[in-house]
Image (cartoon, rainbow, N blue to C red; front, top):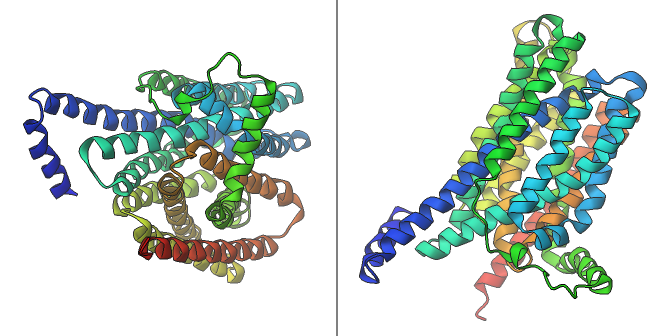
Length: 441
């Protein structure tokens, strides 16, 4: 990595005197945009993530919290089908900016939680989440490609590094957000209106800062910003474009092989939010221990995301890293099947250790999935990232709706089956890509 950078530094001055200055400025802009994007998502999702963890606790009347989250992820799934077209038309920067509004309104709705505020906010957040995540994936990939192109770096390495930084910062939202919740809601303040109002107000301020920070992102001239801007772009063309954005990625066998891993990534996240905290953490540590366990989960998730991103250089490294993450999570699920709560130090240590292992697996899967999609699907980045969110959000919605009606053992069995299917599809994909690269043609 260092040798490539040095080579680039040596070659530039021989072209034009000012070129090295311009390219240095370009390099700073690329990395600056990654820092801004990562920091903004941290500010937004430390608020949303912590609020989501508390949703079923704060809004227990008529299961309004659980149902709102279910509606949110169903809406997320539906709007992800059209998100690639929206992002392509708006541009990735505008998409992530607009997407922040849904998270802000959802938190605001929790200040006055009724069916008339929560349901519309959940529906709109589904749309906002779809475009912010497709926009994020497109923007980050475009930024990495620009840096790799400008400095003749290995594209896979740069994509891995940038994704590692982003997902490392993003994963730390669980750690920071839950610590804020613990600080404000300590000593039973979570049961009072003043305590929750203060917490939600702090979250709204954090989200506002994140939105303002996104305004400083550079505008990217990527596929998303070269989208259909012709005034003659009529209804028929729109429908054709929509169908192509939905169907075309599904005609690619590589996408079909990645979908099981995408769906599993959503299942394992929802399992932590809905099942692990309720069935493993709460009985051992109490409701107040949920924030602490999720902080541990987020800390290890963040550390592993950064590490995995820096280790990513191509398909071979992605294969080994994903395999390690899946194996670790498989071990946790097998442990849970035989687990029974104990007293004493071990009774506290075991749930925290499980949380750390699940966080490591989540960091690996998120980082490598984004890098993998960015490397493979160069010609339809928006469509590929839209498929990522379609299948992720659909699997999350399934867990939320099944949660009241299924036992922990049954859910763990489903998780293991999904993990095996994901690993099988990923292995076949790896073999196909290796054959393609080794082919004489």
